[in-house]
Image (cartoon, rainbow, N blue to C red; front, side, top):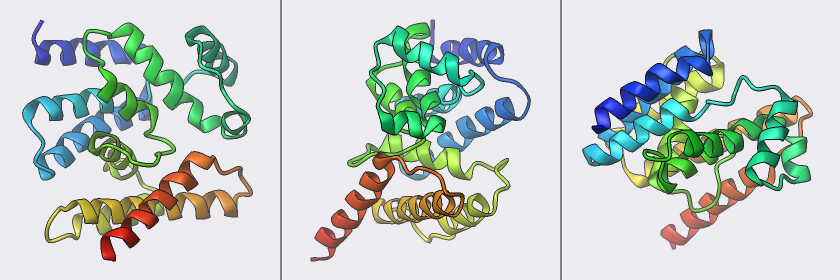
Length: 207
């Protein structure tokens, strides 16, 4: 089966997992990821990986909290107190594992990790992880103020460099942290670690 045929089959199948606005968002993330991959000069094969990760990133988003925990147990993922205190991260974990189980011929480690870290980020993210994280944040159907602002900031660039991408990610982390703090919500340490990594990296690059 060709790459395009595989993507089409999975695209048709994804309607069994997602519906309504979540499905529209998912398809928009897939297209945004392709756009970002093109801007950053990725190969056709790498852009196909981005499209696949975008298509699968929310595959378990509509699962209940109990179903999320059951999937973690099924896949042998030992969730932590940080995960439990940040329930919105579970779909990125379970989604990565379920995507790899169902579509193992297409989901390699690159795609797995792009799905796995699209919610929290992590230190030393790959270009694929960064672009899926960003695509999820700024795709056109997102109408939250922070999403609109970040989208404008990203596309205001004269050139699309690693430094620009990292700066946009840093702003996104700050937005996320500010939102969680204002809502009195728990902050997953992976996000603060991702933010701190970029700050340290920026200081090293400037020295």
